[in-house]
Length: 494
Image (tube, rainbow, N blue to C red; front, side):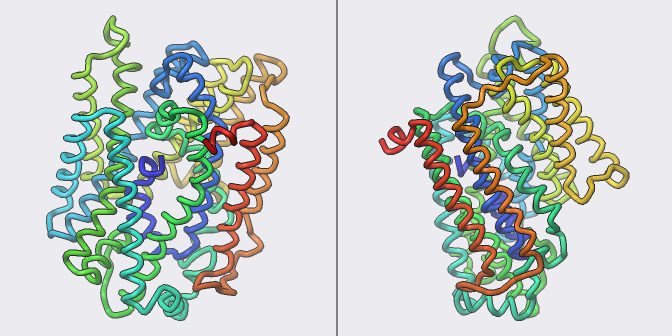
């Protein structure tokens, strides 16, 4: 699950943001994506049960089962496919950066090579093949990124000493709102909220909810996820920050998202540099192959039947669609002048609009199809408005994702209440209690009282980074008790 989620964004964009903005981005990613793991049980367990009981395979299968409306399930499928393409595009974009830095190959050809390699083994295998390659690639990424940080830190005298040197030159890298003042309280809150709504709607993650052997496997994943996120995001962000020591020696960096390839080829030497950058390639490959496989299944089960009298497309149609969608992602990667961060912000926001229809659909006893359709259309209309008229569409100090998510939720609830008169949610008291607990943890993550502060420092890191590591630990303990109340801890232990 971690490997299929952590992509080129994790390695190359995170290290680039670490270089440009500093440690302010670490809690956003480490705590924010770790907190999102609550949804693995909140919606994942229900999706698993329904999937096993009714033979559901795609996200749209679930929507059709809940709402019994073909238009809504097709709308859901199309939104997933459309917003997966830009997310897909950042994988060959990053591959192009790596090949350019390693071998001097133009970025276009690097993007083509990485897309071709992924296509070959994705077309040859199925879900189980992708799952096992994800496991290998995820471990490879983790081991080699750890090696990368060790090499860079040792080159500059050790991690704590290297951080101290950076801090003496640019102390703003260790406080919020960061070196460029970008991570204001509103933007901070925006990213935290966005992860919770968009990550479970990544089609490659959503489909994994069906694939667990039992609910216990989903629960174990949820419990481990905050710790995994903390480790994984600390590595590239720290490497990006240490890149300032490389620049201070008179070297230039034209693109922050290239800081990791530049450091590895300059410090690690040809062999180690190439080996460690393979870890970055592993991260993007483990995401792109899963994306291709999932959107292919969405096409064969949900889109193809619209144009034929068959319930599901033949295998060759799914393979052709994989090639087509991969080429669309490649074309966007080659033609786009935007950064990977700018691209994924639009993609993530578009996918986040789908969350209310899933969440309320699973918990409302009689969810109305009108509520879901209205919610998705209203949210996507705002996504388009913010994309076309970014200057004239106010976000009130937040990322556009926040007003878009609020409108999507509000429209769903409003239409549902108008039609049903009174809300009828199937929420157990224990779930409500732990919902309050997790809400308090989320509020504590909005530690605006620490804004502008950096020290004191512990092992080279400002104390507020340890605060968030502690919050993730508290969240994990709360999740253990949550599972215990749901009588699932026995399955987890087994």
